[in-house]
Image 1 (cartoon, rainbow, N blue to C red):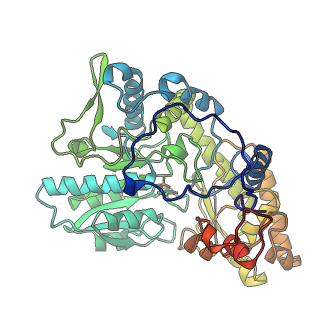
Image 2 (cartoon, helix red, strand yellow):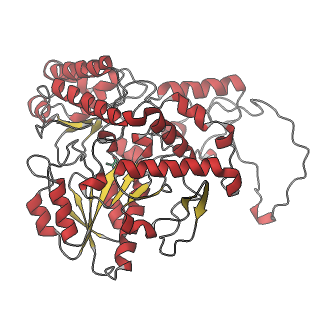
Length: 499
Ligand SMILES: Cc1ncc(COP(=O)(O)O)c(C=O)c1O
């Protein structure tokens, strides 16, 4: 497919809107462009076709089944889009004075109350705009708490599991803590002996996902919490997997002190292409004074923003956070009501149904019931037929499925991490399991078919490392022949696309 720059022809326009009859603003000479920017020049039918063709080549949860473990790619109810587009929400300015934004403030306050209840904890800040930003915020709260107690210098270490999502160690390091890893035992729980050996008076806290990225609920979570609390340390709950436990168990009751929630996963919000997310933090009362400002508070029948928090860590995001995500999450939660528990139960049921169908064909490293997701291993296929998890993932694309997460968590060789979510029909789950079983048969009988997959996608196997590390996101007109005269040719141009 040609780049839009290659389709450009001088003078072509999509629509010519008359110039506004307004005074041209004064711009300092040094800020003015020497030449107008070189933008593609395209007629309207071509531009529509170009972007429609690009859209046809993408895959999203609206296109097909997307069991990307740990990412909770569930259906985004369309009614939420209508609600968020109501003029009172859509047209609200972030600097609107409080009297004119009572509805928005009330919605945020109500969402805070619900999240506190879901987590079994006391106070909430909606500000962080992603799970990873929630992690950093939570660790900054931990730091502020210990500094306030005069233990800031002493508490240097934060412990994570060896199954942790990559953002956990990154956040620990960014927050200035020393990272320590604890091993997983034979049943997929935290190894308590390893843990006891590492927790001491220098420990600031634990950072844990429960259920873990193996899709397993830690069977000793209360004992784990006691080990940390006895050492005066705190427990941080990475709530990215909250979809497994909503209304069933609460992080606060398990002993956690700080939680972040991925609103875009559990309570639905289009995500996956870097779209807006929400990563609120929920904390035990002892940590409330340190939460970001402003806090949304209620005074009788009125709602307002409270900046008067002298111990606050400050702001972590502009204004009050990603407001559109709050509206969608609130609408989602209110639509479920008390049935929120059912949402998690069905997510867990769907995952266990698929696990039961697939565990004989693929290896199951920890043979237990799973929560909302599970991790299989393609190790046997690799040993016996040279077929890897990557080959399985690529072949699934030929069946119109998005591949599961692969090679994560790192402790499972040839890992395939599958998360169906609660919004998929049984027929879809069956079709996916049928495809996985057919792929395992083909691994033995037609390995070449798998090695060369995908066969029916616009691109085949890419150099993914190069694509990630050396992404070319800027078209350098200056490096290329003049495109304005006729069809462009030349290796340099092709190199831009494929390099
Ligand atoms: C277990 C876990 N923790 C944290 C995160 C980070 O969340 P976000 O992508 O919103 O930054 C993710 C995201 O995939 C996750 O799966």
